[in-house]
Every structure is written in C-alpha cells, then in structure tokens.
Length: 210
Image 1: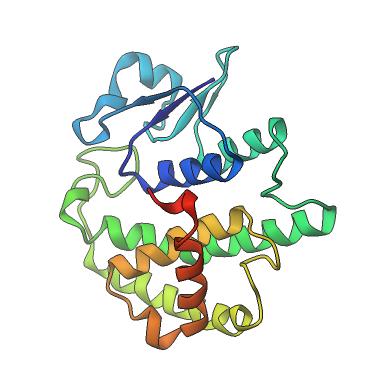
Image 2 (image 1 turned 120 degrees about the vertical axis):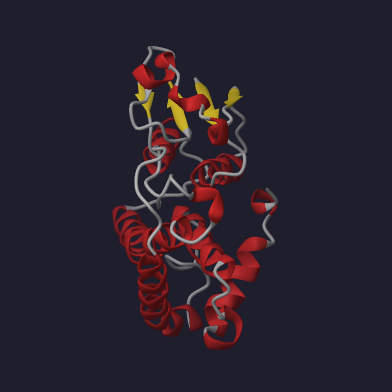
C-alpha cells in the first residue's frame, strides 16, 4: 500500500490520526497540493477527484476518500476497533460519525473555503479557478454549526466520547469539525463547555499531536 498525503490538509490529517490510533505507519508520498501536484496526468488517472488523501493498494486499486481509507484499514487491522466492536456499537459510531460530518464538518468546510484567502479559486475541493468565494456561505456555515453544537452539548455533558464510552472514528471527525469552528473564531469554550472539555481531552491524545 501507498498513501498519497499532504500534511496541512485536514482530510489527510484525519487518516493520519486514525493510523496513529492503530499504531500503523504506511509508505507515504507527500503531494504539494497548493502547487497542483495532484493534477498530473498520472495522478489524475489514479484519482480524478484530485483530492488528498488517497490510498493505492498493491493490486492498483485506489481508495480516494478519507473515511473509506479508514474503513479499509479497519478491515485489515481490526485492533484496536475504531468503528465499534459489536453491531450496536458500529451502528452508534456510524450514526454519530454521519452527524458530525454532515451537520458539523461539511458546513465548516464550506465556511472555511469561502473565507480563507488560501482557498480563493479552490472553494470546491480538488479544483482550481473554479468558483468565487461567497461570504454568505461563511455566515450560513457558522449558523448551521451553532445549531449542531447546541444539539450536541447536552449529550456531551453525559458522554465520555462522541459515540459513548470508547474512543472511535467519530471522535476523529468530531475533532476536525470543532477545530474548524475554532479557526473561524466561534466561541466554543463559553457557549458549549461540555463540547470544549471533550475537545481538550481528545486534543491531548498522542495521535492528535500533528
């Protein structure tokens, strides 16, 4: 296997945290995404979405999506389990994973890409000179995240981790959703203290020292 990576990319960092929690290291090639390294003909043939990370298997199969890479790694390296140990746990982890991704991380992705100058011309991941940044998407992303955090806060008061008592891939996704909110200077600490306490606890894990 070979992992194509770009250090600063949050999507790539999600996979690296997952690998670290598994105690795994994979052969890795760094691609300078900011300079368009992913748009070469050879890499386009491998990964037409031009996003990192992507994983090339020994048989030539390419997996070009962060969570899909994590699911594949979980299948071949099941310990420690990060997607749950039983059918019930796996369903609960998947539920929270989807909630944090769809209701938290995705709105934050659009907000960041439509606000930070580094993403000008690249508001759609894997594109260049595609669409202009829209300030309205920043406002709407922040509003959606506020709604989501308001729903999550009461749950986090009584939960050790996102999906229950055990650390899981849902915590990894949750971390990057909340980190994005802090990048946008959203007030997590005073408005959502249980979320902030969980975030601080997860941030201290060795795997998150990126």
